[in-house]
Picture (spheres, rainbow, N blue to C red):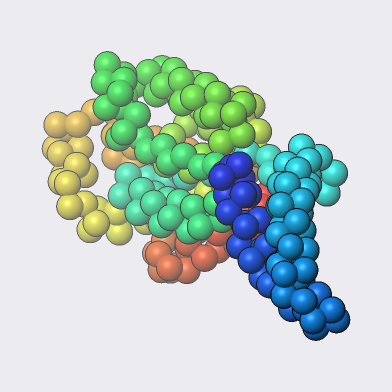
Length: 241
């Protein structure tokens, strides 16, 4: 969000007055044929109207009538590991930034780097989601929207997020687990299948599909560009009008 500063208002006023004053000088000279009178009238008009323009602009900045507040929203990406959450969420975030609204990007890896002692048991994950929900709620209290991407495999944790924040939009990135394995450049699925990683969603732990997702994207059939377009259109239609 950008705020109109005094300096910007003054520069805008001066640039406009250069055009307007020149016009005034030409009009006075045309009717009276006196350049000195035309210049004097132009200078007096310039000083008065720059001050009046500045006062007028600042007064309207304080008037709320005609302004529409954009309520903050939370765009929550969920899905199996390697379903495309981070990639698509990053692209959506970049597109939404063009709307010039207060916006923050939250990703599971970044948050776990800040809180590294959180485990992957059901209890740990649910507790972790409540922390994330509190963070989002705090940002929303400051009119900041969020684009968040978390596996969030359990329905109770996603329900907790929905109850904690306003305008929660769940984006379920539906993906066949075999496709996710093929995308596994990190080798995490292989480690989970070998038993080296426990509580891994889709392998040795459950992933409970959302029952009430606002947006469902089948990443096996939908390209990244198409997915981004669908999500951004939804936000523009329902949240940023």
